[in-house]
Amino acid sequence: AQKITQTQPGMFVQEKEAVTLDCTYDTSDPSYGLFWYKQPSSGEMIFLIYQGSYDQQNATEGRYSLNFQKARKSANLVISASQLGDSAMYFCAMRPPNFGNEKLTFGTGTRLTIIP
Amino acid sequence: KAGVTQTPRYLIKTRGQQVTLSCSPISGHRSVSWYQQTPGQGLQFLFEYFSETQRNKGNFPGRFSGRQFSNSRSEMNVSTLELGDSALYLCASSREVGGYTFGSGTRLTVV
Image (cartoon, rainbow over all chains, first blue to last red; front, side, top):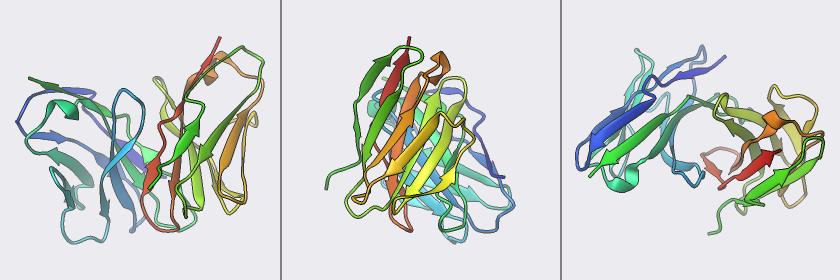
């Protein structure tokens, strides 16, 4: 079974500072995918970044980067130069390796608040 | 390109009633998954459809059901509604291999 743990229920960060959101995972599968989603108060889940378990380099997407440490089973999201619009819930999620098993396992999320 | 469309956005139903939610995936996406989000249980997987067949199912009672049509649009149905069914229901579509795109969700309130 796959499990995602996000230990930070809430974070307050000053605008323009960098922020790291923690995510650890547990799986016995050698192949898996890791995702980060942002959920503003409107409810929509917005895809941010993806890391495959066999990817050699950490994924980056604009201001988002994923600090992937496979041996420690962690996949932390780093947001550089935070903006007020970054205030939202952030979810880490894992996908199993098998094609045909389209089920994401989510963590409990971190509520990020950016302070002006 | 158009995203994932969920209708309606909001619903208020009475206990014991049934409800049907709709999800139109991104064109070309054949997989549609449904998730329930509540403050207490977080995001939980309901089921996934691919080419009109249910391929995966989460741990929910039989009151929760779904289907997928030939155009990949999907519906989920909840019968005999309970107060605990109040939640945000999210639909996600994906290609055979790739990321998931979520809709804005349907917020169901059972009174």
